[in-house]
Length: 442
View 1: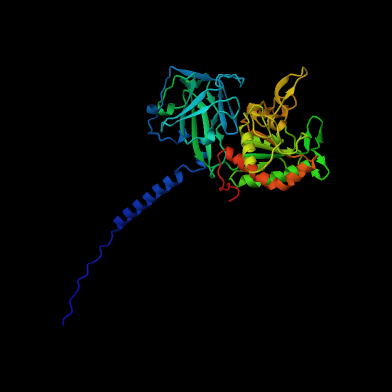
View 2: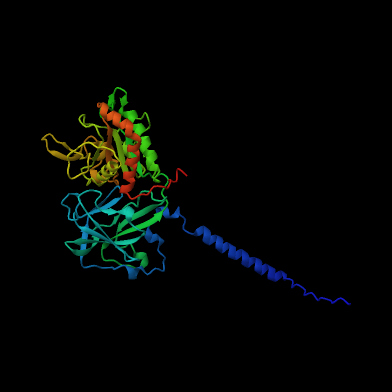
């Protein structure tokens, strides 16, 4: 049988001209794709940008933002304490400031979500920036139940603030009160209306969340000598507080927080000057300054917590409550308005035995920035460079009385649980979950 011939189609040859066109088109598409990939905003690009910088130029901001208000509320000053942002009607930051007790409302211009914060007397009783979602917010205040738009007579631009680490991310928070703030979007405001922008990004490597301050030997710049910490038999405050700080540091890092110590193991820095203990916190933008040391009251044999007189004691109360639930005993301080073992720092008295505005413990007075009059007391002039800084939330945790055998025995038996519970309480207050390692521990 004769074989059938199969006619095969000839493949069309690509002409040299068509090949060149195809090659050029492919290269062009690859170049565009590469350009778009490389030029896209990276996490590093977001480190120094606000939410307004991320808005699409096509976004019709003019329709989202009102340019003029009849009912307005003027502010003159602001402060940061821990993660809390506060506004003030006056410059004095007094308990009688017009904003104390008022409700401040944040209005997300895109989602229309509204969040209310009640301003109290404590430096931490304001806007909890760590709880906000990314977005651009207009700021209002309910002044005796009347909703008013917050503005400033003079232009205000706060240095952008970075919250504590949560799930390896932070919020970049910027506050601006400037009528030209949205001029690139054709928004022409008649006053310097206040805006808060929140952007989620990665933390800066040099920024820390908590600065632990092991007490003990401290250099006194006035005397030019080292003031010894409490030293009783085998119990040395410098060594014991450093060892306890290491335990607390390890526990805090389990929550993804970046933690540093205010001194080296044998270090004796003071609380003043650019090389001082609090300086490290200011330079690295810490949010919490947690001082750890021996009990100062010989009659107390269980841990105590001292908090700033310029705070409401919320963090100290949370620590007392949660550590108590974990079985840690506290001294009986008999202060009904606060938790067990919680005390408010006292004020230094003048020659007439009247209270000044300066607190007794330097670790609280000098760590709170503007909120606690850092660098303004007569013996703390070396900290004047930090008098307008964002304040760290100061806590003085006294863990043991070396003069009491009962106290030292209790501390030895519970120090690991104490460190674990203390770290858990701090994380709980700031609503930080356990599980993430920070970027330095990966």
